[in-house]
Image 1 (cartoon, rainbow, N blue to C red):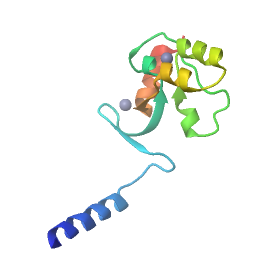
Image 2 (image 1 turned 180 degrees about the vertical axis):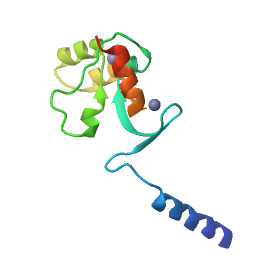
Image 3 (image 1 turned 180 degrees about the horizontal axis):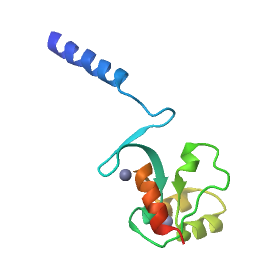
Image 4 (image 1 turned 120 degrees about the vertical axis):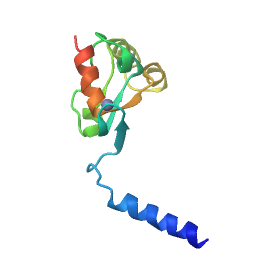
Length: 109
Ligand SMILES: [Zn+2]
Ligand SMILES: [Zn+2]
């Protein structure tokens, strides 16, 4: 019990002293290391030349680091909004912001 408490308090100490990127959760990326969160449709993760669509007026970092491909944009237009159908098609995936920029470069048309 004493040992467990010791470990728990040490873990608590570790998470308190770890540097955090303000106002964003951290992603550990194999390529880019510690980075902020970004959200893209499943197609942008591996595809290329698919188009790169983003919110018109990104209000926050989540919107600024969100993107979807041309096909998802068509579904979005058909549906008129992000709902169950468009979100299921996009199957939004969490990636790091470094990978987000790579996906942007690869998919922008
Ligand atoms: Zn897509
Ligand atoms: Zn990355």
